[in-house]
Length: 452
Image 1 (cartoon, rainbow, N blue to C red):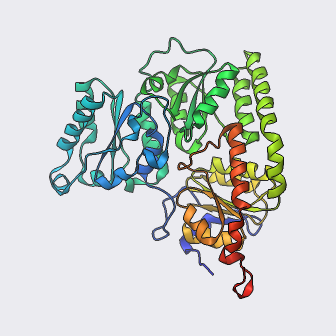
Image 2 (cartoon, one colour):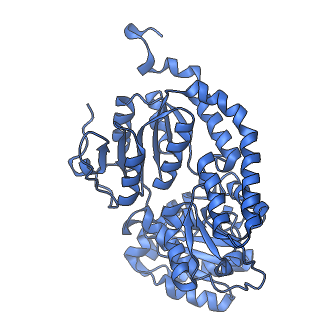
């Protein structure tokens, strides 16, 4: 029997078994081998898809391993974001400081690549040695005439959520510097959508078909110029609430732009995301008419095939462990539509309100976890007899070692899972994974006596 660390007992809850007294939104417990990423990683998740900017990591070369190829955000034009640059701090800079090396690196990169902006990511060692990154960025920005923005993403400062916040603060310095003369009165910014496998293009096409102008996507297929004029939009539509709600609130406070939280995963949620925007622009009823026509058309395309998936998957069990809790909400709805039962649901960055809502959505007996680790995930997936695990790159080997099907719903995937076509892709992947005959050879599914 796997034992849960005493310090983590209140970050795990089984619905129906006890009163809900949940602890979350805290730093990872030492020794728990958390699945959660660091501050630096969080900042890169948000900023990396800005395709016409230089992204320079100020620190040891190892941190530069977190590149575009890990995340896979697509661009319709420039692909500067695909290149990973580092100042490659050595022992000499640790002792005498790395500011000169940072300035030299920035000047060279800007001269060679002619970016629209540059982001400089501070890593753990920079926080320790105390380089004045702000001063270097100001100097180079003045000399080169482009925004050069420090990102205070020292990994030891907190959690992945703190990285999101650092990224939002850097982006906010660009917003408000562009011209908004051609921005429509029916316009939005899509926020927290990172264009994995081209998903931002799908969502943008929906809104444009409805007659809504998309001023910027922050940050999937992002452009510095579009972000600079994002303050002209009339509404911010926030998809990944953990990463972008802070920026939406900052824009609301300074520019008076309201925001809504949506999800583009699953038939129910993507339909509501379109309808909510249409309701906001009630001054133009034609937008709602077009939204309803679009939803009807897209659903009719996928429903016949979906019925086959639902029939085969009915009664199967799934475990969900993802980065943001808002995604978990949508996944529960998607799996229920497919007739599946969710036996474990958790996230890396959820807050008290998120987990309260998650508890209300789940059935009795469902395990709810915050900032989990491999031992806990293994324990509960085996105990609850899950047929499927939905997570990211770090959960994949856990599932496969247990002989459980896996669906990648994080940033490594190559097929879109957002929008109506994304719901079809997701359902097909779940169907093919769960119903694969390979799982009968897994040790947990073998008959007693070693027979297969």
